[in-house]
Length: 382
Image (cartoon, rainbow, N blue to C red):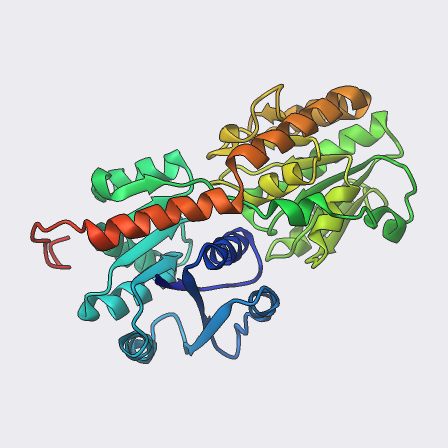
């Protein structure tokens, strides 16, 4: 089976990592995945490109000169016409639109995965894109959500319940289980407690609550060090917050890293402070690295972090709740190790990349061989 995965990548974040894991496992299982990326002078997608090549995945690049480029649709359509692709699988609203209009005239089946909650763009152009995305998803052969809450939002937006499925993300278990803890030596902190968050520096990740929690924790554990791994538009704002709270020597922004298994392996506690999520890859990665997890109760997080069993769940937007849970892990290493071990076992049993890939392949087969025969409305009617 030949699958054309289309994604508009801005770096190597959750959706990109999920797709790389998915394509790698699909290839191992005998399918033929192709990863297609948009490329222009402002978006070279070097991280995604390099990682795809490292994994031995087939890669195609399509020039896209802006948010709306009809020549790109034509280029993708011509490529599909000459490549005998069985199915187009889009990841993200821009990819949904370009993928749908490329595949539809050729009658190539079209499937989309929604990685996050829908249609929250701030700019007028992004909101317009997302409005079209909503209409496209109603016409898709199948739409996959990475969390039940996202699946419900899709149905509320007009996508038929029969065409919506939920598949939780899966991670590369072996890669994170083999991480070597080298971050401590790099930071020069010895055996001091190290607490970390891994996230794009954007509003929905709740990193300001993590920083405020750090302020209170260092009062009780003065040796504690905090790291935030990732980059994004809120970096300057977070730097200002750290300075204003006098935490320059305690909270460090490490930017993007390519040695994530080593980062996770170095942490005493992993923290997800998000106020909005689907199924975050970072939690799966942290548990695969056998790290204790403190996370907010958002999206599908509670499918992985079973409170008091595989991690600690707290309310979103609450620095005191994060503070209390982190301190509990630091005070009781035996309890923390138990959480990490049970989390590790859960991820291995239910959230592997192989399990995810098999579920997607089942849906592909269903789309290819059991497509609905009822007439569909025109795009304007959808």
